[in-house]
Amino acid sequence: MRLEEDPINIVITGVGGQGNVVASQIVARAAINEGFYVTIGETYGASQRGGAVMSHVRLSEKTQYGPLIPEGRAHIILGFEPIEALRVMAAFGNQKTRVIVNKRPYYPIDVLTGRLQYPKVDDVLAAIKSMSGEMKTVESTEIAKKAGDVVMQNVVMVGCLAGSGWIVVNMQSFRKALEETFPKKTEENLRAFEMGVEGIKKAKEVR
Figure 1: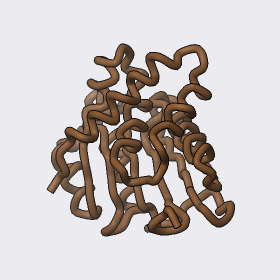
Figure 2: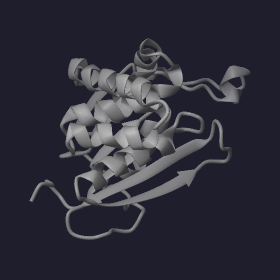
Figure 3: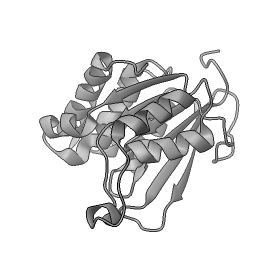
Figure 4: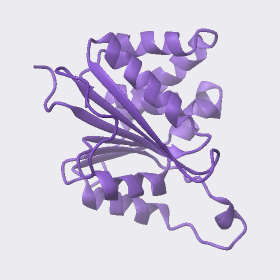
């Protein structure tokens, strides 16, 4: 048996416009390339761009599971935005959940106009850590800029997941999934992915 638990439950969370759904499709394709049964479930917030977006990805060696992960049963959370990662952690995480978070906040319109205040990022990260088993932070937005385009931060985060060693999916299966997902922009997305793989290796665990 390759999986520590079956199924492995992964939640990918962010806001509309961050490429959350595409990231979940890449992870799913990579796992399918490895021969796993894979199910994806998507939930959306009030607006397509700027609203909360959450993808459930479930990997199994045995069978096809339902698309939605039960509350408190996520093994891994991939957070594209700190507040959204905290919200998902509160609902789906537990003391064994592993978390990777992009530290860059995405400010909603109410924060930009001064009606609301975004919490201190360090406080948000500390709250996530207090509820999780292991947590690493990355600057995926900055890494994506260095890779050539900030919109590829979702691919950088997939690279972080692949490089973490937290799921038993071969690196080459991820590369094949990227080629299938971006047939016309394979080179730049592979570059962003590889930079994410290296980025998670340099990331420090939050204690």
